[in-house]
Length: 246
Image (cartoon, rainbow, N blue to C red; front, side, top):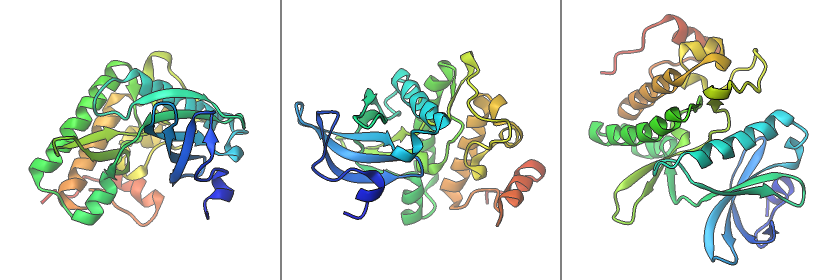
């Protein structure tokens, strides 16, 4: 399997003594997500853990743990549930999440093109439900984008949005600040102007801005601010008005 050298897991491996790996679902610079079956419960889950090379990065470890803690606190139907956390034999922390069968809105938009307004609004309303609960708990997501909104279908066939990835969330009540002032956290196309200048000091309004950008993109097919380089994108957001939605 081509992914094995990078992830150090293969189909059939048993992790934490109870999760049998089926396949790799995704991989990033720091972590990997796999599909697995809880052998005792015969339940399919998604298992997320850090890669060995990320364990020496304490900031990455803290972000990972923060994601788990944030997701566990939020009980909304529209947030991917975290059901277990622990440490693998390698020392890597892991979290167990509900297995989602569907596609994120970035890929959905790419395959479908601009969405009808009622459909786009419905997805955003569901995302708002998830964020309202997170904000009530003092949690700001800080990395909202179509790729972090996952579309599944309920048993009755109706679509449901699941909010993913609280890895760079901020807990306002405790003013958690794990990054240096110079770090830019988030995805630039969806970042509010104040997040461009100071990721550490944003509040829930930064998430509201990101939702507006996402809604614009869902109905037009493109985000309102664009540029060929990161500085150009930042300059557009900081100094110009968004393109008219029509």
